[in-house]
Structure formats: C-alpha cells, structure tokens
Amino acid sequence: MRKPASAGPSRAPLAALGQAGRYLTQSLRLMVGVPDYGSYLAHMQRTHPDQAPMSYEDFFRERQQARYGSRTGRCC
Image (cartoon, rainbow, N blue to C red; front, side, top):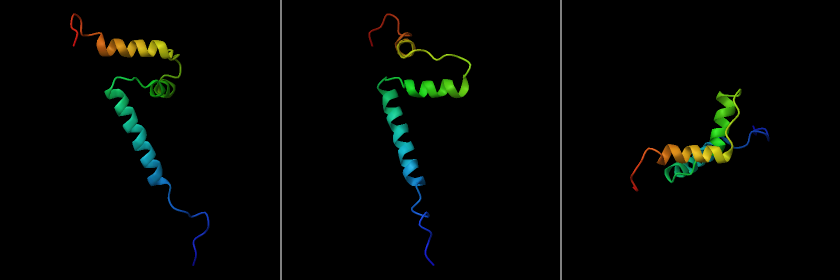
C-alpha cells in the first residue's frame, strides 16, 4: 500500500537545524558584544506587553553600559 501524497518527509529535523543555527548566531553575536535587539523585542512582547520597548539606540546604549560601565578607571 502506498503512502498518501501528503505524507512526505518530516520537516522536524530541518526545523530543528534552523533553530540550532539561530541559537548559534545569537551566541556568536553575544560573544563579540553585538546585542540582539530582535530577541529583546520578542521578550518584551511575550513577557511585558504592557510596557513600551526601548528604541534600538537606547537598547544599544544600555547594553554597552551594562558591558563596559562597571570597569571604571581601566582600559582593559
């Protein structure tokens, strides 16, 4: 007996590979200090829908301050 035409190969492995690629990209960006504004927006929409998200400029400034602001008086 033949399978119905709609029962093609599963897309789950392909979707999992795509998700892994997104996680890898996000991790690499975080390692080199590039903040992920898209993830921030998704987080704000999901968990704080009543609050307005920061603009990209404010978000970037806040992330830079969080990363480098605690090192007062040092160059490295």
